[in-house]
Length: 300
Image (cartoon, rainbow, N blue to C red; front, side, top):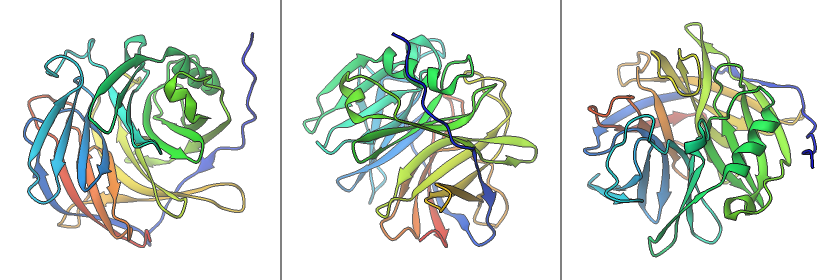
C-alpha cells in the first residue's frame, strides 16, 4: 500500500539574531570519548553518545570523570563502514533512553534502548527510516542528527546533505518500539550559511516552555557520509510563531570572542536557559571529544 503524502508548509527561514549570544566559558577533553554526536542529562549526570562505536559514556557533572558503557561487545571504535552512526538520543516518559542511528546507510538503522537498570536492547528499525526518507522525497537516504519527544510524537531532525534538506519529521512515539512509523508532520528549514557553507542540524534539545535549542554546523561535505572542513557552528532557537514556527541563531564564540572552530553535535541546556553543555566531534578517533561549558544570553 502506498504511503500517504503529508502536506508540507513553506520552509522556515532562520535568521542570525544579534541579540543572542553563545560563548564558550570552559572546555574539557573527555578521555575515551570519540565521535561525540549527542548529549543528554539524566539524573544529574551527562550521557555522551558516540557515532563510531556501540558505546555511550556517562559523565559526572562535578568531576567530569568518564565511565564508558558498551552497548554491544567491548564497545570499541569501529571503521567508518561498520560504525552504527548513533547521532541522536531521547528519554521517553517511561524513563528509557533510545539512541538512534542516523539512517544514512542501511547498516545505520539501529535503535538502542537503555532501560532504567541499564539493560540494553538493540533493534533494527528500517521502516522508521524508510518513512523519513519517503517524506523528505529527495531520493537520498536521511541523516537523523537530532530527536525530541513532543507529547505523543517523536520529532526527528534531518541534517541537510546533498539534495536532502534540513527538516523535522514527526512520527508516533510508538515507532521507537516497532509501531507503525506513519509520518504525522513534515517541516523544512533553511538555516542559512557560515562563510558560504550551508548550516545543517547537528542536535536539538527541548525546553520546558515548548521551544527548542538547536545546534547546526557549517561542514563542506558532499553527502551524508563524507566528512569535510568545518567553518564553525551556531546555537539557535526554534519557537512557535503566528506563521507556525520561527528560527534564529547566533554563532558559537570562544572565550576570546572569536568564532569557535568546533563542530558541536550535542547539547544540554540548563533549566534557566542561561547556560549549558556542548559536545564536540573532531571526526578523528585520535582526538577526544570536548565538553564545552557555554553561556547563553537572551535565550531565556
